[in-house]
Image 1 (tube, one colour):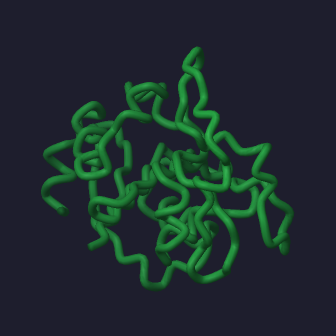
Image 2 (spheres, rainbow, N blue to C red):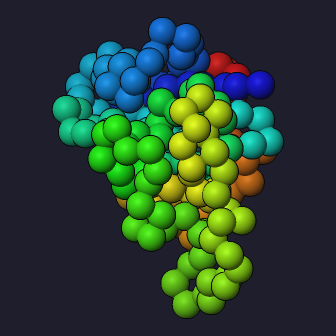
Length: 182
């Protein structure tokens, strides 16, 4: 089951609205949808989750390029909504490439100072359902996407997919407004 909502920052706090992603085909469409929710070019967060599998955050600040974080790239690659977020740029590949440059991606989820697992990297590669492309499992994107709002990289990386959006909203002071659209 999927859930998607927009959180728009206003002078009075956060406003939430649920959103249908059926007509959204690209990240540009999603960014446009987010910009429509903001009257003053304030920050808008698009929160997307697939229950028990993955969550994603897209941050749009005015006309700036959207910033993206996905908790599990491989799980999202098997989802039509997740594939919207997994752009060529985010995956570190040129448009039209079949396989991302796996060495350039930081998808292992380890934090600075923690040893990486020396197992064969092929164990962490999962094929995308629609495209047949290989995508590593694990977090991908801008890990500092919410740092200035109170959710730093370490906190973001340990969020459980089951309750991540609620925990993010709690830190933002938007839990009640998010719950109204859930």
